[in-house]
Image: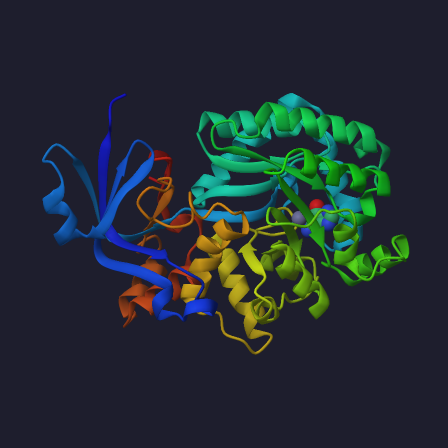
Length: 435
Ligand code: GUN
Ligand code: ZN
């Protein structure tokens, strides 16, 4: 096999650790003039240009971006592929929004041709927003997950997805049964898990739409396949929480429902967690489960404000999620913009280096993939983005006013969106070019 070595010169930034654990200064590495060397889909070297360039053979092509920032590709720890066509649906909070807009839209994914078409749109949208890995909900139809994995495999993306398991409290056209959901999930695991850079996630939608038999079988799948993921929703909306109490009166709290069916663990990612109590945070931390913080969704659906300091206090792993179509943007930069405001409304600050962490290494840790993605450490997958400081006239002018790199980063996360993503690379291959 031929080794294709390439180098990229720009300002380069990546996280080294969580600022909540090591402090801001020790949490990142920044090269004002850096070089990233890539070979055969992996990162070979990273360093200051004046140190790395002299080590490169003259044959290595160096692409120079004088006014751009290279960071790791963004990681979206919660998004719904079959909700692409209903982003921005008006007027309702969670439970009515599901019935009125979400379920009819997901119903269309029994048609494989439709799923193929949307998979293409969905992955293009991820990549043009700089997202190189996502943890994705399919619809209840296994065809939806086949469509998504087929498209992701063609691009050699690191992607995690699963078919929704949902056997009650949803329309007939959108429900499976405990047995069929088990059998279909198992077949998808056998077909896709570990193929290329793809992984499978067992996906009970949320406690109200699964019977006890279905939750039991979801737990059984996790025991049969210990390295697959579990994704679901938790404590997003107050009416939802009341409903879970009524459906599972014998459980201590919402999290205890999932705990009871042995669905918690190091590869479990629960979306939202807006209204968790301390006991639930404690248990999330003990089991190594992660929360996907989805600010645009939590604001759009009027769900509430995620308490990040509480999660930090209990050392719960937290990643960032767009939650499209409850969320309103595929852009993790825009998601960070809203995350900042969610913290402001609680009298808290979100440091830009913490934001970087949430969108990259924090997501990788939530997914237990930090040895492969989320940083630019040599040996990891060459998944990275090139962010353009001059993407818009305002961004360009505002960055020109900035006095520190921290200010540049914050402005990028406040004003930036898909327009700021000049190029996206996955496994060393360019998978998006804006211009
Ligand atoms: N809870 C159960 N299903 C969903 C969903 O599709 N979106 C959101 N935001 N919350 C949910
Ligand atoms: Zn969701």
